[in-house]
Image (cartoon, rainbow, N blue to C red; front, side, top):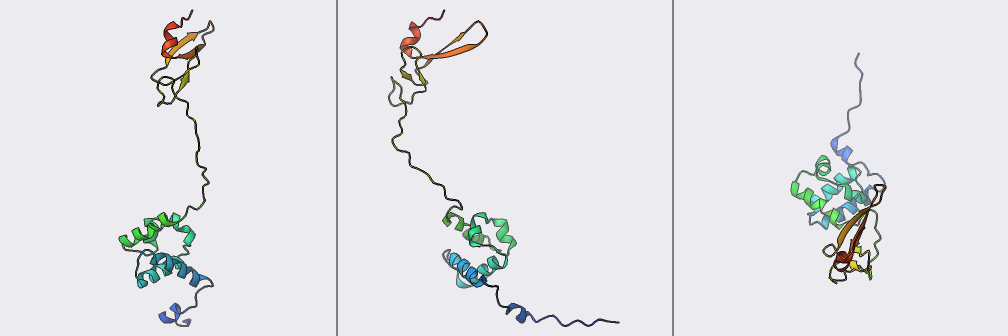
Length: 161
């Protein structure tokens, strides 16, 4: 006993299916993007269709990579490279607010005004850079140490008992 099944639709009939609502505008958006990369009309149309068929949205451009483009059917390496260049043209997915740094005052060494100061002299409170600072360590009776920084002038005058 053989079951009879209807014949499959012809290839032309399958390709004539009306696109899903919105897919035409998505395809047009991809087409426009691809045309900015100097693809010819046939290539832009083909690739736009591939992106829409594989449900790749325009806002997913930052996540595109070479393997993904290969997997959806973009075979030519040069074309994949051109498409990946869209990532440089796309705005960041989450904008980062940056404020300009204005009038930042960096403490300067008392002896080297073009060099940033790292420490303050323990005796005279002048600012000193790494080249000028002198270090003395002292230990109290409980095994705890203290480090003090001095300028060149005060270091020689300092005596630790």
